[in-house]
Image 1: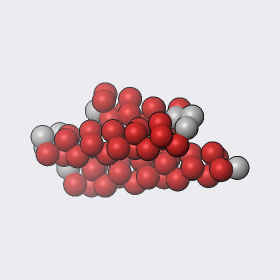
Image 2: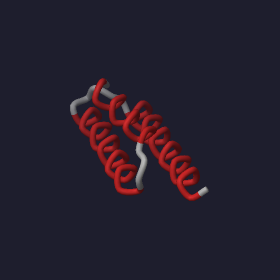
Image 3: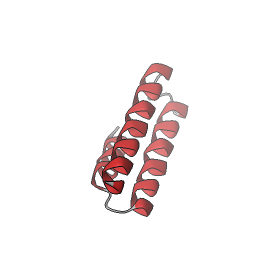
Amino acid sequence: MKQINAAIENLLNALSSAALLDAQYQALAFIQAAFEAEELNQIEKQTLEKKVRRIYRNQLIEESA
């Protein structure tokens, strides 16, 4: 969970499109790895993925504004 939270924090602090995309991929990869290691159940995985997608969209909107 520490890695997932750190990746989400990186997503929130991304200042460029490239950094934003990298942070999103990293967060989703950590979520998938935690799920495969059975550290997360399906509901937790989906909840975290939604959170990452929502932050990504919000950051894109802010960047374009």
